[in-house]
Image 1 (tube, rainbow, N blue to C red):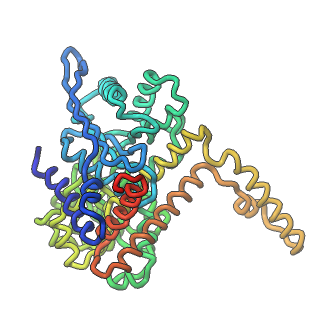
Image 2: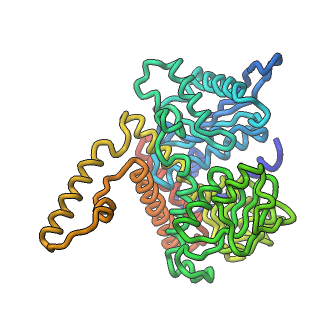
Image 3: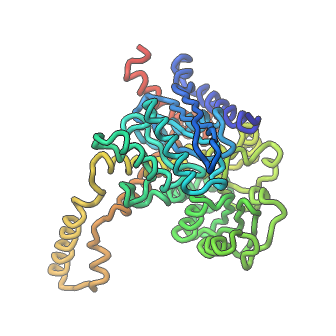
Length: 472
């Protein structure tokens, strides 16, 4: 176990303790909330070519106060038990913060996906799923995995197929995993969900004039500068949506191969195409190369978005961070020690367990869709459209004026699944931030958003445990 990952679990634990001190909850109840309830460590053989590979893998269920438990599966050579436990814990708090009725879980398979063919990855994924089924660690009412670092909709489809082959009679089987391809019982808008959630959260946060004044910023997204570390699913969608719908200027981007900077702004759409064509972001026209890929964290900007892995901002580079707002699109990119330095500098840190909760929120919508066996909007879309059409016709008749067909189409459109998903996500991010900000305003001794978010989560989880009668 590398000390790096040990410190990630330690950071989660320290942040928990810091917040727990601001609650009046009994010690035993706090200890129960903090502990990982079930840890399943496994080793299984998979035939790779002529050799047999023994794969190390995990599934951790952190809390059963709400069922099923929920959390992604990551494929990485850095996977270990402590990391999976830390991520499972964060999932519990994340679900509570955004009022998604799941307990937290996480899975990890210790492989580097780049080193295997599609067929080999399929064999590993199916075997991992079979192990979970055997131990009753997966199911629509038990534990529902999702994509994470190194996995995507392809792996989720394999998991579903394996589950169906072993649990054929389960009518709700499609709900055993989320993040599936749309044509395999998935949901529109799941791929962009985390990035879009980051955008909705940022837009809400920067709308408060008083809060922005403390940071020396004007309210609103328009014209704000942004630096992004990591152009994966989350980083790329955060950049695309923030620029297109928020008017944000992206001035720096870092990826595995290095970092680039442009004062005039970087077009993320063009950059993604350039990287697809050239296999790198380096040399993108109109940008200059930065010495190190970590330099993106030290760029002078309004909003810094770490969207890579954990422990990116540490004690050694925290003093050099010049952003006014850090939006943790990744899980745990700031260590507990580094956070103290950043807060003293007056930087606003938006915790990952709130701002990157868009993925689990839309996963929840996908799960609901699977249990209802019907896509969102199917029942009401045409009814709403006809109602709006009738309204417009009545207004035209009463006023004696007509509107163009184009305007009529815009006004009378019924909601598709993607519209409803985005609406639900927007509502979730705005409401949750209101609850976190309320804790911050109410408790004078709390001066950072992470502690406020933790307190909000702890209050909700503890009331569940008490209502269940576990602590009479």
